[in-house]
Image (cartoon, rainbow, N blue to C red; front, side, top):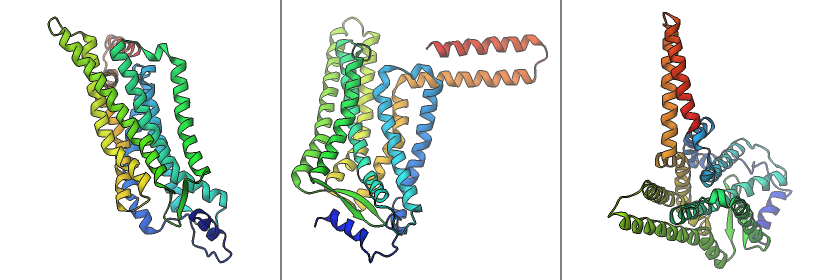
Length: 343
């Protein structure tokens, strides 16, 4: 009998005492305290970022779809953590239903890795689209809308299909540690190597290759134009390459240890540390993206001007002497608002 069946039979045993199998022990809860703090910080940073998207039309562009898809996976990772955390500290049932028990366990064991694998391929898709924009001066978001839609759907379904197949043919199994964790373990070294290649090595190498091609194109173009002048387009392309390179270095440093260790080890202090790094990366993602992309800087500047005008308007309205002062402030406020909308 395999480990999955053993855990299942233990769960259904007639001698099963009230051990509240879903409830974390005090030690398990304390081990996740740092991750909880990181996730709370991440909720704040992501909320500020998405409020910017809500109020600033200038950052609602098709060319940013991969960035937003990536950030949505961050939100889903946070939702997954808070769901598991709340269930695990409040589940006091002695014998929860089998369906609920295994649903919680599978969400805890698989969703984290599924979303992390999606993120690496989303960044690869973003990088390829930017290379086409830099090298061929083509807007793929306008020219290939259907292809991008198919790419999104294929990415989500193929990754999920890979997980389902591995469980169906028993290459992967659920390792249940009552009152502690539910983890995925693999039955042979071949599937571990396959997962490391497809979830880590292959997309990382492809991303490095595309970054190199983009940087090489920008360098060669700059060398050819150095005798005359560097165009605004070339400056923009150079900034795209530098922005993505900085973000990718930070992201790989914090993201990759958790993904690699997921394939080769199920628990321990090292796993907890690397998962904490993963959540720190989630908290930093909106800050890094907003700091490196000039469109977000411009949106914040517009928003700052709007706030200043609003403050001046309210102050002038409260202390106005005649209608002329109020009228000037109203005209000034409308002008700034129009510039923000047209950006």
